[in-house]
Image (cartoon, rainbow, N blue to C red; front, side, top):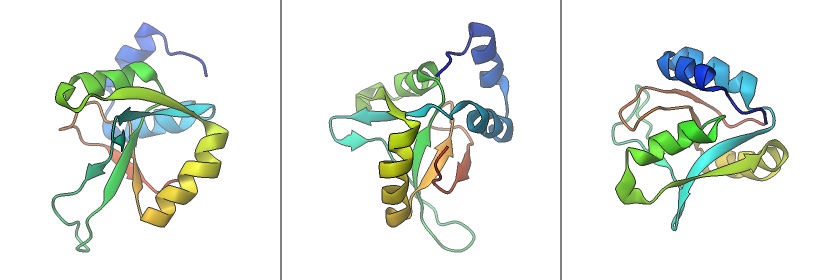
Length: 124
């Protein structure tokens, strides 16, 4: 996985959610980063139903550890750290589990208050 330059990282932080999602899809072919703590993977649970009345569970994912770590620093009380998942393992193990649980992927949120694109779990 090629590491982003500081210039690329700064540019990604300035993108809107739709463009960050596009960037993610083009840079996550080798693997993704998630946040974990002692309790397991960090998941975001909806508190309000969508227009169809559903509540969703979202696994945030990033293509660069520094973006994931930046998010984790904004919620220090959760004890989160970035963990890399190889693309093959993500496709074989995580995607089926997430689909079974009805969970979605949150593509590169920058903060807990940030808007993000969500997508069905698919291999990259």
